[in-house]
Length: 131
Ligand code: FES
Image (cartoon, rainbow, N blue to C red; front, side, top):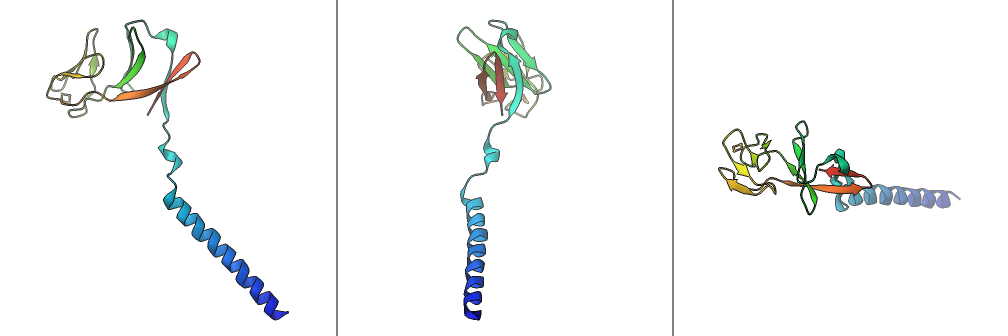
């Protein structure tokens, strides 16, 4: 009888060990779900004028509606991180004068990288900018 109790304890310890060890292995091998993008802001499609833009200074994002599509750009300058200003024709950094076109491409340095294009998801009448 004692032998049976001992082997049952061994079995339960083995199961506990496998559970704990398996959990640790799972934690390191399976990517974390924190890689999912989060909604930075929401905007109604109808609020964005055609060939116009909505600027969200606090989030440092501009949502632009062209003839073809709607897209969002980060207003963080790719040179040293100043907030880029949006004009009717382009985007201008007030710090060192980089100029970007409405697609975020560099027209004039010192910045040598385009503005970051942010993912936009459509949810019915809403657009959600994801980061
Ligand atoms: S931080 Fe924008 S040009 Fe330097």
